[in-house]
Image (cartoon, rainbow, N blue to C red; front, top):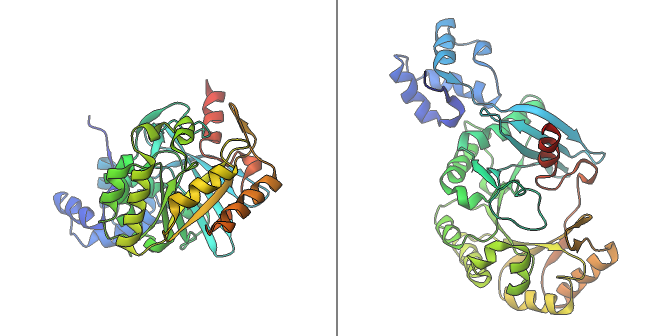
Length: 345
């Protein structure tokens, strides 16, 4: 017996074709899709006939992930551990801001990048996520918050390298932007990459003006190579050139993410290298203080964080310190999943 396919992995247009193949009228797609976006089981789709609900259940799954557990921080951040249909777990983090709710989603199960300061890649890459699974992350959390649209912004900054799952990520972006889905504006979506240069150049031509973010973390190639293995395959300067091309093509300001590691990438030479690298670009640097320690690296003091910010600002670089959320619930990428999986062994 073949495995049932997820209905959520199909666009409304594809849903019409599926229904026609089942001998149903295509207009039924317009009845079914709103139920899918609210994470409603087939049995509760009350404007469908019992016969159609039965046919759908026989041939498909809805495609919604299950909520395995939720950790809630004292600052309001919620970290969801979601179980996919094949049993794999992914993290999704909901953050509260004055302008609305932002959801950080994963794009792969595990991660192949091996950045030394990140828990996402501890077990390596398991597999890519489908567009429907990414959509399911957003819809499950949105439904958990109540009826209507509860999420205003999405960031693809969770577990995985989005641009190594290019086709599924682009498909997901179109699906979540669809007026029949949550209709999230492209300008309210950000994507973070370690610097997969060919995919960055290709993405600039997609016509989706989202905010592109580069995980930079050092403007000195030798230092970056120590903490980010991608530097050995995709050169820093090529990635920065791709960011500049993206900004010129889309008209969107780009973001450079820079994790702050005590006594490693916060000196005067680091600030100068960053200023030279980004000079002339319409961009912003997001400074991210590392919490605690990983291997040989430790997080800086608050004073050291703001001293480095001042160094950049004196050199004409726009830089802010990212607000730290969810520290008491293991809010950084991959931490909750890694601990939970360790407890299951």
